[in-house]
Image (tube, rainbow, N blue to C red; front, side, top):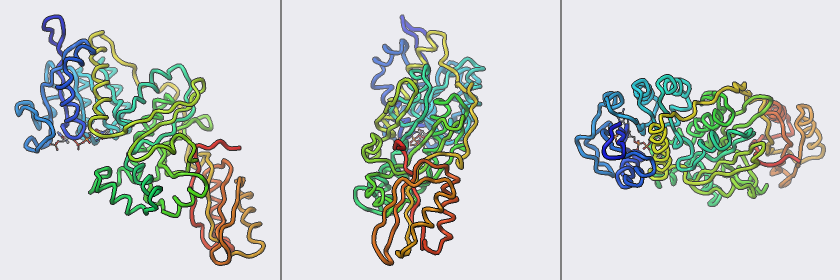
Amino acid sequence: MRTTGDRATLKVVLLGCGVVGAAVYRLLAEQSADLSARAGAALEVVGVAVRDPGRPRTVTVPPDLLTTDAGALVTRPGVDIVIELMGGIEPARTLLLAALNAGKSVVTANKALLASHSAELHEAARRNNADIYYEAAVAGAIPLLRPLRESLAGDEVRRVLGIVNGTTNYILDKMDTSGADFGAALTEAQDLGYAEKDDPGTDVEGYDAAAKAAILASIAFHTEVTAADVYREGITQVTAADIASARTLGCVVKLLAICERSHGGVSARVYPAMIPREHPLAAVRGAYNAVFVEAESAGRLMFYGAGAGGQPTASAVLGDIVTVVRNRLAGLRGPDASTYAELPLVPIGDALTRYYVQLDVADRPGVLAPIADAFAQHGVSIKAMRQEGRGDDANLLIVTHTAREDDLAQTVASLSAMTAVRKVASVMRVEAEDDE
Ligand code: NAP
């Protein structure tokens, strides 16, 4: 930190100048006077690490600031804050540990890193009296981690239910509104830049949402949860028929990140599920994100907004930078990771939810009784059952009351083995509905 006149100047370096990094660089320049007044110190960008300095960029970075030597930047004497916007686990992890060990504070948007190495990064920050902030890592522009960590610090969070991946929300929304199948909706999302052309798997297989679920669960339940602890299913198996079935039930299909207290522990899972069309999350369209939080005293809260994009994500990064500057000037650090509760993780087999099951059955007398019996034998209670079609086209649509995953899986296995059931056409979870 350097002091000129009556205001200090803090030196910052950026690791990455891509979609988010370029937006942060531009906003730091364009808003420098306001940011300085709000934070209480001026900010000077003294280095920008990239992979290829010759690559065309959306911002003009002076050539003498650009470097490929990120390692030298993070330990450079005089640097106060390292802003990591390169993504991935390595070399980001090694670089941020080096930065923290050199006493620099860190701001990052790297969900993959935080969801797998949060403990060692927070420990390095604590040991070195430095800060680590990562609001942008979950749901882009939406203020979510700070409200969970700070505003709700006096409350008991029961459940966090969110649409935290814009790509999959776009695809499912497209399937719902146009009747397109998964492949066609994915191609459109890729053409519009919502999904990666080469490797859409991180989004559509649910890895991105699982990383965010891990971060949300850790903060909401004061327990260390990593991405590997989160049960994950993506949306690649969702069919146009599933979407149509959801419609007939008054539901819509969303990829949900669900983190909740259950059986005295924490259940964290990501999968596509039906939710009622009147639920606030059902109204989240296109690539938007929203997170629904249920807390003991606060009740139900909803956070909604742009979950990605350079400028929206940069807003969250800048908010963290201002916080770090204020902390530095006050000689303070932000709160450490709170993991005191150390709640056990609930295995997916014990997770409780409701199910929609569609069976292709032979339409003849006496078929319903053994099917209902298969549910009863495994302790799964049926809420509603409806038959559609006749003869060879008969379909049974069944919605259950809340049941354990394992019990439902055993029910489905029994149904599959019955001669009266030609095919278990679809099984999908139903979330966000009160069980009456
Ligand atoms: P991006 O456009 O791919 O940019 C990555 C930047 O990092 C590029 O400038 C690249 O350099 C640089 N880089 C990569 N590896 C490097 C290395 N080993 N050494 C030096 N520089 C390196 O990525 P992004 O979309 O901005 O995402 C950045 C981070 O923000 C990720 O953690 C992502 O998960 C997170 N995030 C992104 C969004 C979003 O909407 N994009 C939203 C929320 C969070 P070159 O330019 O030379 O290739």
